[in-house]
Image (cartoon, rainbow, N blue to C red):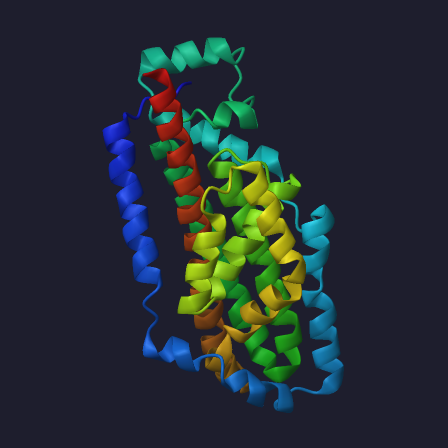
Amino acid sequence: MEAVEDSAYLSGELKKIEAWEKDQKQAWFWEKLSRLPFLLLDKLTPKRIRDKLGDALGEVGRFLQTGGQYLVQEKSVLKLLQAASRVSLSEEARKSQERDYGGKTNDLTLEQATHLPLEVMDRTADELIGRRVKFAAAQGATTGIGGVFTLAVDIPMVLGLSLKVLQEMALCYGYDPRSEQERVFIVKCLQFASADIVGKKAVLDELADFEQEDKSLQVFSQIQGWREVVQTYRDSFGWKKLFQLVPVAGILFGSISNKGTMEDVAEAGKMLYRKRRILARLKENSNKI
């Protein structure tokens, strides 16, 4: 099914994303302070747990190289896209689509997904985000029970969920997270979500014209220092995680913290991937003229 958005609509949606990007560069006061408490947190956390935490965070490096243990199932996302596309179709169009797919409803390929209407992509992305946010909040409450001793489990877990939801955003907008180029883009999304004002602007500058091969190589070269990305992500938890150090009371703070982190990461992934798809369609429309 070919997307039918005209350039005027796409340009309007692009302006909304650009307004969102501008808003992201205006950090709240508490965000400026949120990185300080991790200095205290390091002192409160036993060395054995810090070492375990460092090993787990090293998974980002393996994700960049091979996808590691965090690769998501492409088929499950494509099924959701297929279902969402059928909801938006008229009865006649639905029957036509069934003929095209041989009467099946789960045969949508990633290449076909790139042509789905933006509305379908958005609806599927929002559904997946809702699932991940709820799961992260529940896990945060669970790990919050044990205070500092479960913090070493909590942060790597949220990192893993973040990498997974970003891959799902890639698939929703027709990009393959198994490719090295997309894994780089995903980690940049992760960096954007947890960066300060200067960092967010730098990421947006780096991702401009990402589709150009020389630009992609440049970004990949820059991200070889991925440990800095991990450190930024870790520090962004800030004072919110200090409250989680208190056993039992940490249930509430763990849930709130993880929910907020997942919302930020998922929103960044959705908006940045949505922007790429819109720019690609604007280019396609201009080539048709």
